[in-house]
Figure 1: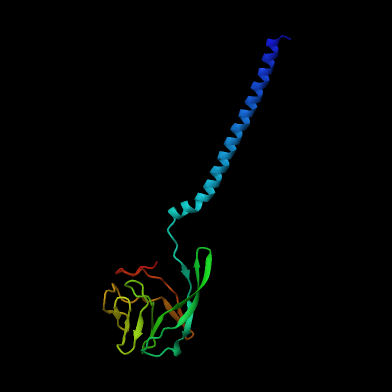
Figure 2: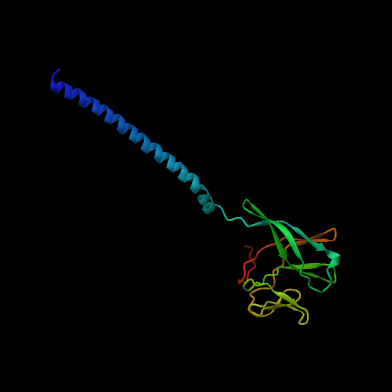
Length: 184
């Protein structure tokens, strides 16, 4: 074998090895690209779902607040109660207070303690016979109507029901600062 034939044979071997090496590199590039694309898609799915579907409101259930016959007639009472709140996959025990007004006919009104102006917690002033917000001086009558101040709407009434002399309330957060009562 001459030197030229020997060089040709060795260069063919190098060409075959470099072709195999390029083939492996191409395969690894494609495999890595496919794997990274799959991981990116899995990570993007929750984000894409949030863009497509409307947000779900926080779920709460009706919770017992107290026995109906323990509430005085015509006098607001602020009981505290605990409830379970579910937000996506997260469940938590939450404590709330509400304003309960028992009327002479036995019916009940349950107010959220959050002022509809900017979200401060209001109190009952027994001597003035009105609810008063300490933040911006909004005042409300016993039936929740605005008597004065910057509040844009009456007090928010919470969903409630009475079963077997027990008052049950479902907590709802409402957007403050707007005329319309909108759950958030």
